[in-house]
Image 1 (tube, rainbow, N blue to C red):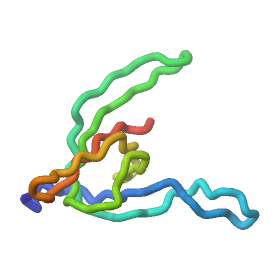
Image 2 (spheres, helix red, strand yellow):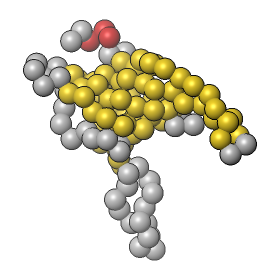
Image 3 (spheres, rainbow, N blue to C red):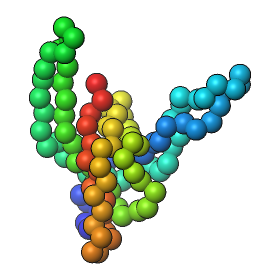
Length: 105
């Protein structure tokens, strides 16, 4: 994999598993890793749901191969948050992971 293609610094996060000062579950996400990535928008659409206009974008995010990433986590790039729906590893060469994501808006 060519390093020049991985041109965005992203943070991979999971839902918080800790508790706050009072003992309630914490909603703050925990950082899993900060990695270089390539972000490609695959498709997008707009719709009206509940009287409000919403948009949805399908995105593929490629990172170097690693373990410990799964669906349900999220990727953050700047102010944009992407929910991971599937993890597609390169099992043959173990060079990269493709994360199938959707933009949260």
